[in-house]
Length: 217
Image 1: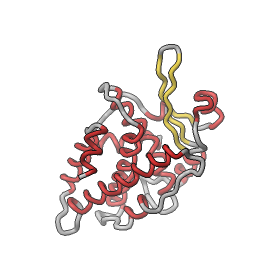
Image 2: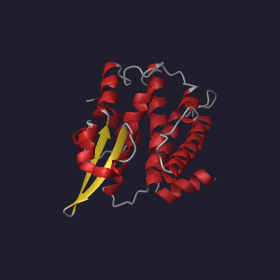
Image 3: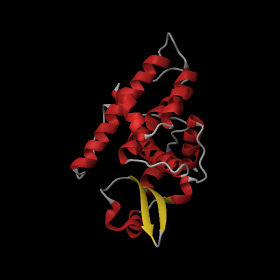
């Protein structure tokens, strides 16, 4: 049920319901992933959304390694997000974000680039973690979260140059955007959480080019 609860966080955050539940498309076994996706399963990642075309139809699925889900089951981040489960929370939330945004876009016949998916996931991870921690800490702003999520990052060594560049660009753009939102709407002397939420929802609905244009300003 954890992924369903995570998807509900995104649905409420963005007021963006979708018809499909990520848990219904979940694969947890790496061997099963290879059987479904084949050699295109990519690097040894703990999270992956995949799209497979066969017999004129398109299949969408979500892979999250079983070990990640087991650790999260023992240390529920929606009850207490902390140093011990933040990494696994981000892994699972990234997969749910990819799935949710892809399904939301397909339902509106909107094309989605890989960079757009990664950028939205970076924003989603930070925004949901910030909202959870603020609630769990009785309204106290988690000041060190931004550095944890955007500065202390690493990438799989087997990534090709194009993929590494895409992840780095998504991280860089999302870090600047989320910092800007914090400073404009969540500063202790001018807290406007309703405007923070409205801006996140507006950004979510922007297309790839519009997102990049805004972030370039």
